[in-house]
Image 1 (cartoon, helix red, strand yellow):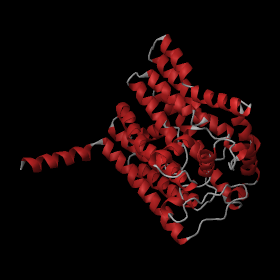
Image 2 (image 1 turned 135 degrees about the horizontal axis):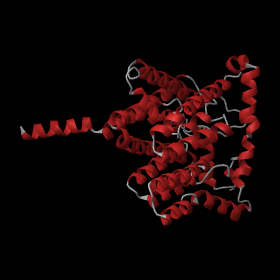
Image 3 (image 1 turned 30 degrees about the vertical axis):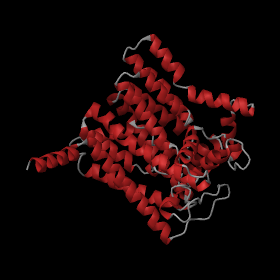
Length: 396
């Protein structure tokens, strides 16, 4: 009887565990998305490649994985396989428009696993790293929110994170999950006053994405507000941006161009193409925006999400600590001002939005049909965009 009681008690503890609950949310959402991708690819073949798109059918005989290695995954694969500027590298300017941490981890995982370093193995590695980082980041994010606002808000914030319309990028062979994990780790370290460890997380974040540079000022502001020593502030300021600095020094040494990242990024288009073109389109040709090229609908959704994230910012500053508030603000405003292309996935990392939305949806009058409508609507958009992405549609 004691054994049965102990088992029942363990089951109740597991059921009541916030970590178990949010992991269940994350895993269930990924299983459903993998299922949607696999099922639809079994019925309808993927679309032909766009003119400037790198070949990205790495796993044609593994349908349940193939749809998750699209678009930028091809750039990461060719970097991991051939190195920056190496013979055979098909990415623009030899892949210099992509930061190094993610492709380095892809290659390392393949090598450690004992597999041959091939395109297909690297594609699987990219998906595995993205999914693994996401499943680690989710409970850490929930714990971070729970320490501030309790488990109910943490569960809702996690649900919103997992079901955000572009959150399929947390499972695709992209660096979004890795970056999310490093951001959450950095802020979790600040809760324990592990400031230099938080700075190391920021170093890794700045070696994975240029926007990782939003993390150092956020950590500095939070540390200053918490009255840390001047020595610690200087340490954070020096250590946090080292990832980006190291990449610039590498491109200077290897390609005689410390700004090679920005040189390569010019091939992807500038502000006129990525913002002003759509401003004119929406204002002067709204019918074309809605009924013309279907890719314009992705930009419409991006701008709608940008509006939501911007609207949330006053509450972000009012309700959250200054570190998360500043980081979220920089993510939203810098990306929103610089590009409306791929904006949906860039906004994913503005984590303060999910926390504020969860707090607001917990209020009386919002916790019933408004909350359900937000979750159902976001889930439908997420499923639709996942299917489009896996079939090679321009939903990036």
